[in-house]
Image (tube, rainbow, N blue to C red; front, side, top):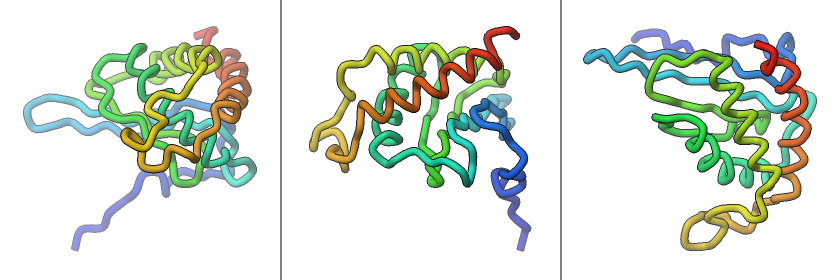
Length: 152
């Protein structure tokens, strides 16, 4: 049986400094298409986690806002550890491009007045969302990302 390597398990979570954007995967498809995966880390692993309500609200908000900033988004999904999100896109993208798009999307989170699709028809757990929590994490992450990526 072939040994399977899970990329996120190879990263030393004690040596990273959140927040950050990290290219963590690239798949070249047989017909030439490229799929790229990014680690959008919001909080320091094993030190701070986002509440489920904040993560869930950010998931709904970023689902639209990141697509307004980037073409060919396949998915943006929360990490089970609640320290960030995975972003999957078509195309070979650079970390700085993704970081700037995330900064712009988080700016929109701060302006949001409601959470999209926060109802029982469009969401399987619509009661567990916090717009306030989403904005708090967005504000905190935004300032740190701006200092890291806006100068590149």
